[in-house]
Length: 378
Image (cartoon, rainbow, N blue to C red):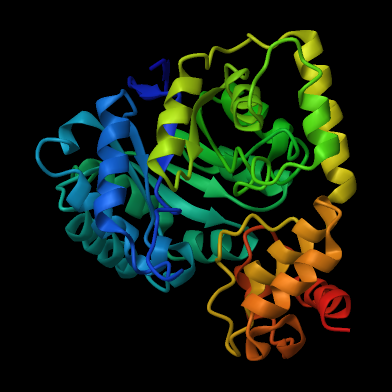
């Protein structure tokens, strides 16, 4: 495993981090984590050099932190840097911040968090948090030892990102970054800005919720295959992120032990500046092909759930995107109508807007659901 310095922190983190929001589950229920398989995956990754474990209060319907806490028993807690996040959207007072952090410490069965992030910052959350004493809270949790380093994760426009970077003495930040999203949210401009300020950079969604590696279209696979150096789509996508020296670690939300093993193998080649000009041209060619196909920029994070009327928003978008990306509208239409119950389909949206307020990607979900309904239910 390769390691990189983590911004201002005098710590070395593994280039591959374990993102704990996509564990294997039973019956398709995100709250029913397969504990045995998930603990095996986490411990295998740690045994093979992964030392950055990232979870959050809402992951797996609030069950991820507890699972991670169990996995880090038997001496594993001392082998890793543990990261979790303050649930920004739940904060009404400064006292709430302390309440949630203390609850997280109990869930994780630990006395301290190595890297604590203010979760999913956007314009609304940022204004509310600063009004309620965020900076005093961050100062206090470092002083009392409950947290070693503080940072933030981000889902909004780059101008706000820069404002947040400059507002506090952060150690690190976490941004969505992959070869498609160079100009999305913080993007490359924000990445460079934060790095120049000395912040460590955590890259999330390197595979765009798995969409860059599952059922790769033939025309895109044929482009990957033109390279003299043979790599899987996952390896190409991860290698693209690791090519940036500014990025300290890349989070992968792994769902199987096989994925863990593969990604650890890829991480052995995660050297910055190792992509050739021909490699980059190939990646950009694939990027352009994908951008022509994607209809909704959903990463399946599920922050939009639960919908008040039960619309299966991410699943609806997945069928819609897969149909467009893989030139299989009719096949995905059958799947949509087979696996999404009538009461959960896109046409049942009542346009309340709750999902749009929660979406970290700021997607026009209501209008996109109308497109899904027209395509699959018309």
